[in-house]
Image: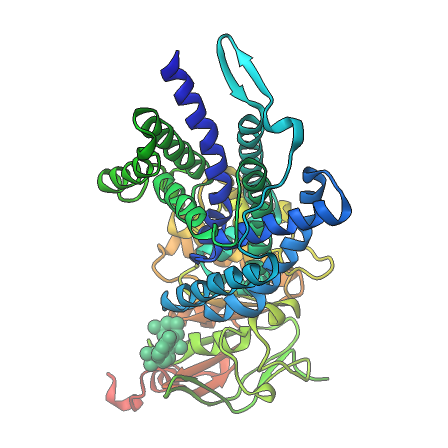
Length: 287
Length: 240
Ligand SMILES: Nc1ncnc2c1ncn2[C@@H]1O[C@H](COP(=O)(O)OP(=O)(O)OP(=O)(O)O)[C@@H](O)[C@H]1O
Ligand SMILES: [Mg+2]
């Protein structure tokens, strides 16, 4: 039973990584932009939720509902006024600017919230667990996983069933021709990044309730997100979930063998996929 | 009354390279005009300028007497000017129907064109509506490109080389649709390399060479030798 148990923990952990990654995957899919500040934006959102919980005394889930539109607005402004100016044939400017942004966010958080590590308290949910015929799973990991599936279902609905989603895909295919359709790419990109920041808020909620975080926690989250996106294949959201799960399973299996191997096992799984399937498991053509 | 579209001394550049040198054309309501010319004459550059893909000096292009030369493509299309771009440029990850729907993104108000009326115009597209647009034959793809432009209910339809690379029977089908499009009252600009085709459909023809208009007039008033000279730059007597 212990192996199945380990596998289940890994799959559920994958849900958290998929949440870290979904926003990154969305933005990359639409505008080929790799946002190196993605992890720091998750941490920023976690502090925002913490702030709302402590000042308004709201339940963390309600606080996330309040934080989501604020994060959408932040993402919109960031994309419209800053990142859109970096997009072009050259891939270096967006990397440099988002790298700089990452440092700015970390230092800003350090100034405002100090280096202390924090946690969003979820009270009873933190320790609750359910039993499936001998295998027990924590309620928190289960809820995280279900949330990640819901987020990806919702995103796929948005992308494949709405006119905004059509505009996302058309712009991603061919920006110039999209303008002939009356689409304003800068607005489309701003809405996409705003949407990604709402997913970031969900990711931040679970990050903050499951573990301690501090202003420097972002880059490690970025790496997990990045690995999940690459394993899954660029541009495929279900691939991103699969990538998160592979990463999660590799980490828990590694940790079961030797607790020190947890992080390393994840990176090795990533490198193996890259070695045998350089375009990831589900590159966009299969979407 | 001002013309629907008028260009005044239109110049256009790609970096330092000048592609248009003072082009004057006009388009009247309900009219179909053709722009002909050899490869590199500047026909597509003219279409890109009018549709806003190339931003020009504001007063060089007038729409109903108002300057639009410096407007970007999304604003130009909201004024009822749609381009069927050279090479079709369908959205590869969208189905036929989604391509058509995207054409309606900047639609202003009502008009004759909806998914149903586009499918009436090109029935084959209805059968293939769930296929990826790029899985269609060249002629069918061109129908999607025209339908996509019509979905915005334009008063002005610009068509850049819609017959390029298509079989004669397919070209005939596509041009057959134009009489129905004209019947809705839309004005049409057709860019063609096939002179005979252009003379057949157009009320007036402009011939371009090396970024300039070298000849214009009604098809019945134009003489073959003059067209050859305007098109190839050769004196008529040099041709046999
Ligand atoms: N993107 C570009 N960058 C630089 N020069 C260009 C560009 N597009 C066109 N040109 C040049 O501008 C001139 C006019 O080109 P344009 O495409 O308007 O010609 P055309 O009449 O449409 O030709 P064709 O019949 O081949 O489509 C040509 O000399 C061409 O080489
Ligand atoms: Mg051309």
